[in-house]
Image 1 (cartoon, rainbow, N blue to C red):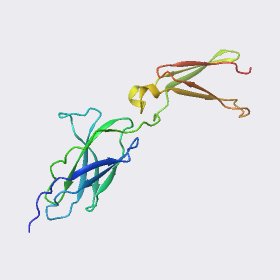
Image 2 (image 1 turned 90 degrees about the horizontal axis):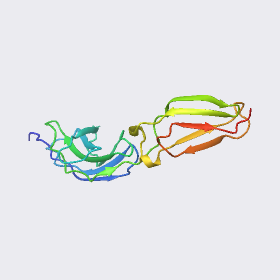
Image 3 (image 1 turned 180 degrees about the vertical axis):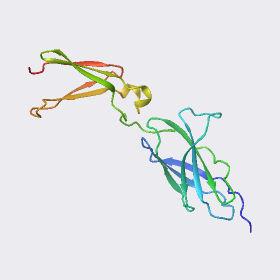
Length: 180
């Protein structure tokens, strides 16, 4: 019996939503009388709609009996909608029905502010300046983004002091009441 094109996976469910991963559960479609060699995951990222682009975001190879998979390398605090395809020796199935829309969780920024400079403001204060993070680097709700400034004595004695700046577009801070 010659192999045939496989059917589409069905019953796609999403669980374990994290900042950079989700788990997809699914029911395999018709295998085309031969083993499934690959599972493909496609997603709409950020902007989701009927006419938006689908990108391949993951593939699982040589797991013909898979019923779930973890999709890695997603962006934090980003909207996604998924669909799947299965592949056999004949070719690739049509896409599955679309998953529900989800948003990955927030994560701390991956980068620190750029161009940090520190200058003497007086005998007992220092002026700190930086370039604020661009919005795509927030990895979360812009209202939850701010800056944490930690400092202490260079000899390591004494406590570390912390100032929290909750304004995400702030670009400077003066550290005051330092010892001469």
